[in-house]
Structure formats: structure tokens, C-alpha cells
Amino acid sequence: MPEYRAELRVHLRTGVLDPAGEAVQASLRHLGFAAARVEVGKLLTVDLTAGSPEEAEAAVHRMAKELLVNPVLEDYVLEVHAR
Amino acid sequence: MPEYRAELRVHLRTGVLDPAGEAVQASLRHLGFAAARVEVGKLLTVDLTAGSPEEAEAAVHRMAKELLVNPVLEDYVLEVHAR
Image 1 (cartoon, helix red, strand yellow):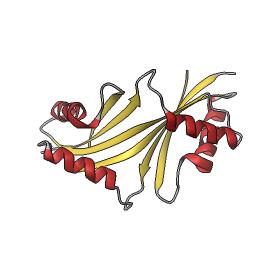
Image 2 (cartoon, one colour; image 1 turned 30 degrees about the horizontal axis):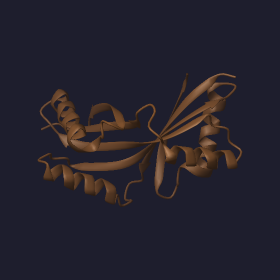
Image 3 (cartoon, rainbow over the protein chains, first blue to last red; image 1 turned 180 degrees about the horizontal axis):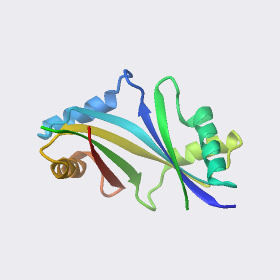
Image 4 (tube, rainbow over the protein chains, first blue to last red; image 1 turned 90 degrees about the vertical axis):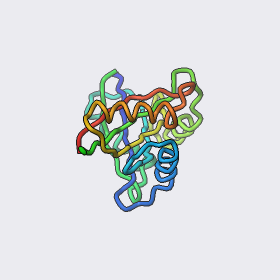
């Protein structure tokens, strides 16, 4: 079966507090960098086999729903490429 | 000054152990999903102002070097967009 690599970019939803992002922003300021905002999100890379790109995408959406993403706090963008 | 959004996709270098990725892979397997590999990386979003896209990119490369990325363990891909 063809092999695919899925990249899930997981962002915090608007309005959700991001203490990690604020800590990084404060450290950057300390080093003399001015960043208006920093967000610390997750980048999940999943290698899988599937019958087609559509099947791979559907499988990773199910993984996101069942485990990888917390829909109350996070949303995500999914990209799937053949390997 | 123009506003930019930089997205840093931080991956673990090849050969670096990724216990978080292995844990996620095991949990996926437990749920009936077959993933050949899972990697848990970081997705850093930095909003900043700069004179040009090139200046914004150069600033975020410096931030990566000085704080955001550990070059022994990680590498990264940077994308900068005007906001």
C-alpha cells in the first residue's frame, strides 16, 4: 500500500491561555527581541500506509478526533503527502 | 512597520529519541490505528513587525538560534507571511 506522511499543525483556539507562549515571548524580550505574540503549538507527524491520499487523510482526521487533538482547546490543519 | 507572522516547524533531528512520539504511536495502536511512526514536534508562531519580509525572516532565524531551537537535538523550517 502507498505510504503517506501526515503533518498536523495543532494551534490553541483563540482565547485559550498560552502560558508557554507568554514565557517564550518574555524570554525573547529579555534577549532584546520584540515579538508581538508567540504561540507554542504542536506539530505532529504521522507516517502511515493507506489505499489513497483521501483514505490517509480520513484516517488521520479520525486519529485527531479520537486522540491527537483536544477540540475544546485546540484546532488543527492537516496536510498529507505521498512519501 | 509591516506586520509578519512567522511559523517555525521544529522537528527532532534524525536519530534523536522521541519518547512522546512513541507514546502517541502506542496509544494510536491501542485504539486500532496503525501508524508506522509518530513524531511530536513544536510549532512556534511568532508575530512581529519588521521593515521587510527578509528582515522578519532574519530576525526569527536569530530568535531560533538564540532561544527557540536547540541545534543539537532539533532542526526547523521557517515560513514568514505578511499579515
